[in-house]
Every structure is written in structure tokens, then in C-alpha cells.
Image (cartoon, rainbow, N blue to C red; front, side, top):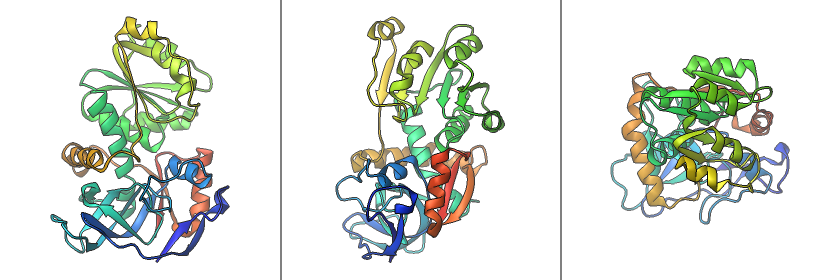
Length: 325
């Protein structure tokens, strides 16, 4: 088969479409013929040599895909050859075929094509596990999403609104904020010329927000704690603003607040399977009835993966960039 390889770490042109060995499913695994995959920032980090795949994962980028089941490994039940599926991956989505643990498969939602389905697994699993399974966002609470126009952000807005929460977002342009508003965001903050702490406290009558989904890490750690309401929960899922920061424990104690930090890629298979099962139960019905939808900014052939990486690196998109195979 062919896959996007990275012979040497570097810029987008380090991505090379090349012949590689065909994968074979082992116990509990399914072989998927890939129709589409989506670009995530983790792929950019891997290309640059900063984010190696977990042990045993394929060496090629790609944390999600959609396609058809081509073969079943020993011990797999509940799936058949020819099934249309999408999948959460530890790597390998930028390829013609990929092996997936059966617990990380999802059916393609009714009414969606493969390109749209490929944009779903990583964002739905990340948002549902952090905002709902860990931070326990409830109806009537306020969620602050940093990077509201990203793939994660556009999904978080929709899911929070679907459960009856109020949503605040940060983004870097009026156009991106307008797209967030179209998806249901209530409080819009341009981080380039507004202080999000002041804006969310003003919009909540001084209370602050109940849950924050943060992609920035160290840079926003202090301001995020200030923006939290009493009993607030800060969920950190990215480190775009640095990995080391200073945490004011006194402020955290006073607010009886909590800080969590997670990554999805390296979790044990059983944890991933549990998250995928929860997404299938709670999120898939919302997608199939049209209340929640994947936001795909553009679709490119996988041979143009370098261009897709340039788009994501420049943050010139809204939602996801998808590669078709």
C-alpha cells in the first residue's frame, strides 16, 4: 500500500507519499481501507519530530479516518467486511489501509459521506471525554472554549449547546467569531484585542465560567483560573502556549476549583474504547438527527498533505481540513 511517510522531520514538504508494507490485523483488530482522514495539530508536531507515535502504533501521521472494513482479525465480533466505519487512531490514518482496535471503531453516521465522517472521531472523543466525562458540564452552566473556530472548538460549541449550556469562545478574527456565533456561541471574545477574563466575567455578572476547554496551556493558566467560577473546572488539552506555568494554588483553593490535563493518543486501549462507546451512545444520535455536525473547511487529496499542513499551521481554516485517499 501507500502512505504518507516522514523520512526526515521538517516542514510540510517532509511529507512523502510512498510505498510501505501492508498492515495485518492481529487479535481484536480490524483492517480498514481508508477513504479519508483529517489533519490534527498533533500531525504537524509529529512531522516536525516533536510527537512520536505511541509504541506499537503505525509510524505514519493520522489520528482518525473513515473507510470500509476490509478484514477482521481473530476474536472480532460486531463488525463485518464492507461496513462503513470511522475510527479513532493512535496513528496511521494518512494511508490507504490502517489497522484499528475494534473498540475504536464507530459506524459512519447516517447521512454523512466519508470526508465528513473522517472529521469526527478525534474531536468528538476529545470534547466528550474532557468536557462531559471529566469536567461534567451541566445544563445551565457556562463553557469557555479557547480556539472556538478550530475542529475541537466547533464541536465543543455544538455539544455544549445541545445539552443546554451557555458557550463563550475566543478566536482571532471577527470572521471566525461570526462562524462560532452561527454554531451557537453566546459570548464572543477576540483574543487579539480583548481580555477574555474581563469579557467572560462581565458577561456572567462577575461569576465566571464553570468549565474551560483550553488548548494553550502555560500562557493561559493564570488567566484561566481567574476566569473560573466557584467550583469551576479547567480542562487542559493542548500546550500551544507552553508546557510550564505557575499555578496560584490559593486562588484554586478559594474557588474550590479543579485543573485536569489529558491527552487522548497515548491512553490505554480500554480507556479509548470506553470513550468511543460513550461517544456512540451520546453524540452519534445528535449527529444523525442534525443537531450536531462536523465542520469541514476544505477537502484535499492526500497527495496534497503538505498543503493541508500549511493551512492548519497558518490557522486560516474553520473546523477541520480533510484528506481523501
